[in-house]
Image (tube, rainbow, N blue to C red; front, side):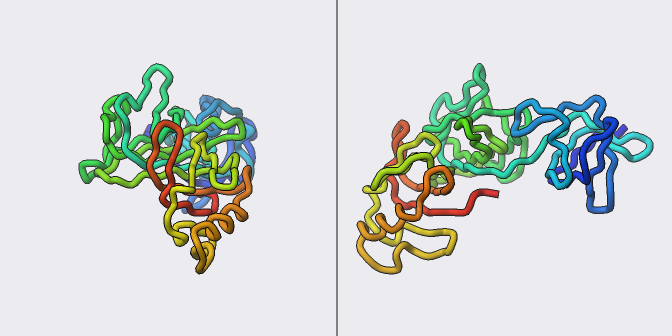
Amino acid sequence: MTCTEFHSLFAAGAVSGNIFTLNGPNGGVTVKTASAVFLKGGSAATSAIVTAGARLEVEGSLDASGAIVATKVSIELDKNFRLEGNAAAGAFNATANTLRLNGVTVNIAATTRLEDSSSGSNTALSLSGIAADDHLQISGIVDAAGTVTASEVKRTKPSSLTFIKGPVTQKTATTLTILGINVDTSSITQASNFVDERTGIKIPGSGTVAQAQAAFFALVTPGSSSVKAKGTIIGTAMAASEVELEQSLQ
């Protein structure tokens, strides 16, 4: 049998008799799940994750009939956080299986994709090989309990870009809490660096820094707004240079 993977395909319906159908580009594909494990956001789940329209990732082997004998069925959740920056020494904790970037501790799951493009070609990334100042991009899911889990970790060519992007959990008149990081916007010196990326416009079109800051914060709703913040991070505090109100990550 041939090992195979199917990514971002949609289920036609639920599992019945240890079988369901994926809607593939060339028609329906039968998936046999008797020996499969089910995962949701990297955590153990049941076959109940397979519903009509669910976007799935399936790993397994093709049998003689062309059906997939699945070993793993994962539901693909919309990503709602992203980090980019340079790793500190000891960023990967092998015991806890976590990776720390920009002050945020991220869980590594069995389904996390690990990629290294720092040399110009894409290869598998060894987390234990991450060194100080390696430039990383991490994206994934933060759940309702605040647990942060990576869907993808990528080491890229060197860069000075540093940002966090995720749901806002708290705000004051000048600060935002994103992924546990306290983002202070009083360090922003240009009104044009308060941006509503949902519309692609600056906030406001003209005005002082204080006016732009007030207008921006009026649009932010903790618990539902997603903000990208660029700046300098020390510990769990960021002195922001720019903030963008954005759509949720897909």
